[in-house]
Image (tube, one colour):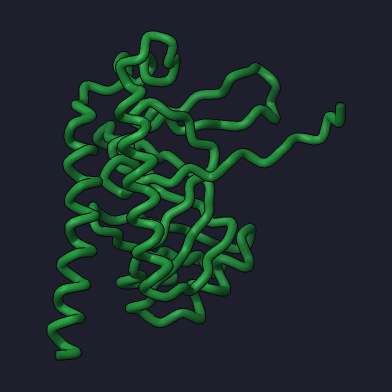
Length: 198
């Protein structure tokens, strides 16, 4: 067996659920052990994968470029930050002009504000411009994954769901509603486009 660490699978997650997460943990004391964000539906995420619309971008760096992108999916907003240590992602944010559909893979990052709230953002590994069909496919697949996590939430053997129940005082029904609303938003878009073509 090789001891080379394998890259963690990037979890598909909607902004609504991602932003409600805030609890991070490691599964070993090794200093190189991966950090995980605990998703409220009971899964661990070392990396996330989302697709949304870049609605605004801003260079918020002082001495060096440090780009913040605001990326919206049907359930809410992701904030992605990229600087000198994420040169490809920073370059993508610099070059892209809103509005644009983006596919983003990155690591969850948490930050405690002065008033004790936890803000969650993404440190992107890759940012790719995509088309509306790719965005729609992501919404459908992410809704499926979210509903699968919710279905497994009450399973006694699901240690991450147990952890989520302990860490978050949240109802997973809100994420079911968000997933269904996201799917319904696609149908509305299809109807609008069909009407425009008629």
